[in-house]
Amino acid sequence: MTMNSTQSYVRTEMLPEKAPPVTNVGIIGWVRQNLFATWLDAILTLMAIYIAYSVLSFLLPWIFGGFWNANSLNECRAKIIEVYGESQNRACWGVIHERFWQLMYGFYPEHLYWRPNLALILLFAGLAPILFGSLPKKLILVSVAVPFIAPWLLWGGSVWVPVTAFLGFVVGYLVHKFVSVAISPLLGLILGVLSAIIWWLFLMGPVGEALQNIIPLGIESVESRKFGGFMLSILLGITGITLSFPLGIILALGRQSNLIIVKSLCVGFIEFIRGVPLITLLFVASVLLQYFLPKGTEFDIILRVMIMVTIFAAAYMAEVIRGGLAALPKGQYEAADALGLDYWQAQRLIIMPQALKISIPGIVSTFIGLFKDTTLVSIIAMADPIQWVKFIQSDSDWNGIIWELYGFVAFVFFIFCFSMSRYSMYLERKLQTGH
Image 1 (cartoon, one colour):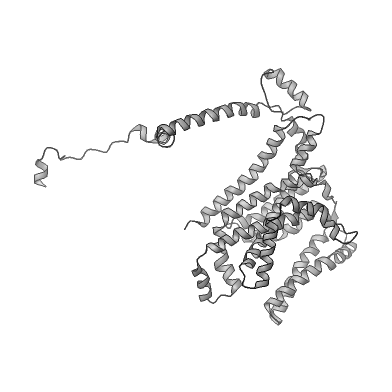
Image 2: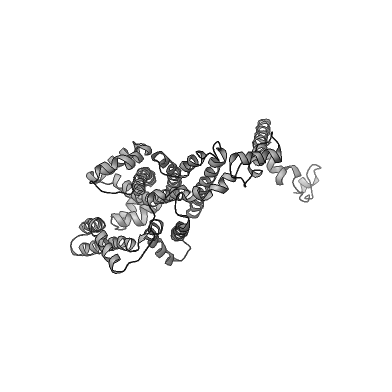
């Protein structure tokens, strides 16, 4: 130590700490490191800035300088020329202002708009305890009631229809519980499902009519052909998402089953549905399905489309979940066996929570794709938002308007899809899916 302190090039006192250079910290440091680190980065950054400026300098004035008060496209264009001159182009948002409620509800009666609004509020209240575990568990009662109350609010009719539909589940549960205890759990499950189906097909209608005759309670009915706009897209999307998820889990488990008949049925269903375009299934729902039903049978078109959309999404959902099951190490299955759990306990407590956690990105991608695919129903003449855009364009007052209508539809779809994507990211962070 003494020898080093006598050498001239060894410092004997520590210098005080100095602040880093201004060009390496803060915004300037971030810009240098991320945008102008090399010559190539600098060139690409300048090109990107120029392209963004060119697009936004046209788009922002077009969007925010548009006119909301106009009753026709010609009137709107006349106002634009009067204010900005002939060389400027601005949006005619007056079409959205005038046709907003039709884009939202289609032909649904105006004095009954409160019913789909209330159904949507109840839906969010029912989804909240499922999506966010920190909420009170009592809200799960709302989740159970929404599948019966929401359709009744939308279509109206006798209040005994949702009540008797719920009784089908009660009948199935009671039969399952009684037979499981008395004979065997498998037979109880089969008979429970069959008894519920028999109730819904043959007993639900007469019992509902009898109750309606005794205690007449109901609200104004609305025909399915009056459904339209975003209300129809949201209805099909949420129904498909809600039903395809559990059906996809069952199909994924069936495809991995050791029972050859169950496995063959699930594989055949998944491969057949995945091999057929959704448009074909929608045409089957719209045209062909009616030919296979007994003469005089009226099967609601929205219900038919819901079934086709659900089974189409369930086939893809099954493969996404099967990917999560395949990603689990064999030790997890062995651990479940070592604990003495039966098949359903192992799936519920160990296997499925981990498989679903791994599959979250794929599941949400399937949900987003399903919601966007609801626009295909315009091909079978259902009045979804795309069909309503065509209706409005065929009006002589708004003939020729394009970007405003499609831009508004795209913006609303983006809000829903972006919300689902953000919730997926929140769920991944909460469950810490990284390994």
